[in-house]
Length: 465
Image (cartoon, rainbow, N blue to C red; front, side, top):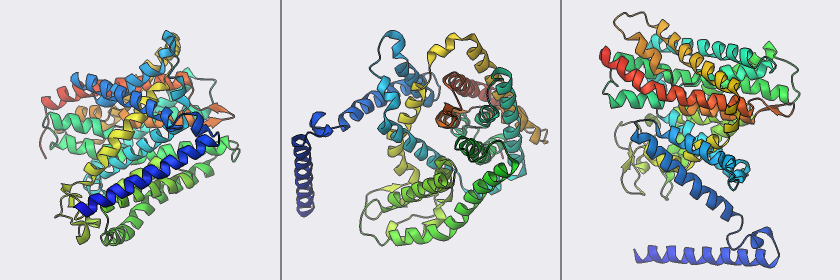
């Protein structure tokens, strides 16, 4: 123990010495780091993190006290911080354009989609059956075309690509919010719950494919690679998305077990978490390189990390067959991979949601057309997901509950909207500030309306599997 402490002390002294020498050199050379004080540019991001993380926790706590998802509290606090200029306070305006903060937010959404993938496995998706697949398919098609129609109605002067992206935004479903409601009321093992959760997982995959297609088409047009919406371009992007996900699953089955066996031979702690993040970031990078959204790769990374891949790695001390539960022989305790990822998510994910809220321009709400757009978009989002119930032919199943359970857009809808706000055609954003604000209102309303409606429907009649 003394030797270990001595090593750590030596490393700490060395690190402080190196950093001190670096700071002194920069200060003496008149660099920006010296002019910004002893901390350098990191001082600005530290202040931003203090404000954003404090706001996120306060907002999340407030909303959870009213039985609403914490993510909405983070979003609302972001809206408040981003619109302080309406009260003459513009000190936080640089937050919206800080590149370091944007990178951290994007890392947060990558970790979030990685978590979503971890909560699902290929084997579980195979078990949900034809009903869940059909429910997901209907729940994608109907909202997409309804959203497209609403976009054409309210934004007739906008390009077809804007209408496409609005439709894509409505295809999302937040499986986490619905799962939490079902678990809280003790209905997680009912047939309706199995169909809803299975359909929501498939919905995520189909929604990401649609997002990849729409994003790819817009990116190609924006870069001058295409002059219009061509069928060949669309088919190629669909093929890339499908090939990427299927290829990731196949390669994952072949490579991941060997990767973890290699990791079991390493003599350092944290190998399991590091290798898992390596898979996540690698697939996210590859997805971005082939023209897909990095979140598609992150989701695929979580999907391929099934417990069967690392249960035989003795060096990692994996225990039994308990869905990724393991004991790291180089570290204390028995954990799930989800538990190891959670601290990283607690830090990064709220940054994403607060920043998404900060991009909402409340001044656009003074325009009655924006509020009308948001209201009709919300109605389309709710009505569109009721098409899921058409896939259920069993009269003993609560079909209304299945449609209601697919309503919340939550974090997935925000991710779609955020990507749209970053895409440009001819220098103009695909999703402008008014449209973005309308989409955020839709996300908030669909997320708030689902829990009470689903609880009332499920308590009325549902049957266990």
